[in-house]
Image (cartoon, rainbow, N blue to C red; front, side):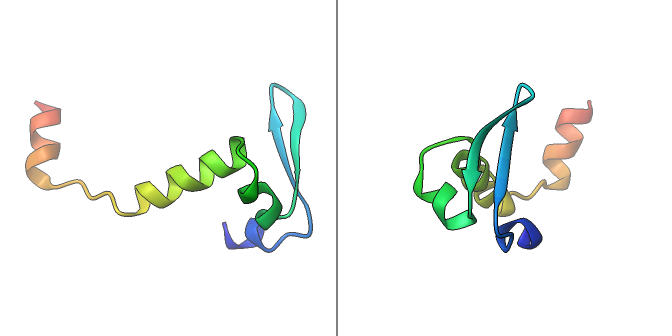
Length: 59
């Protein structure tokens, strides 16, 4: 994501249409798909799957 973050312009596409356009900072400042994606990614960075959790999910 560093490459995208440093881009001069980011285009957000949904259903084949450009729905947002701007720099990383501009898109983060807006409530929208890009800001939601970045927030979800930041949350997921801290997730860890323990072996006991994996075993219970597998069966």
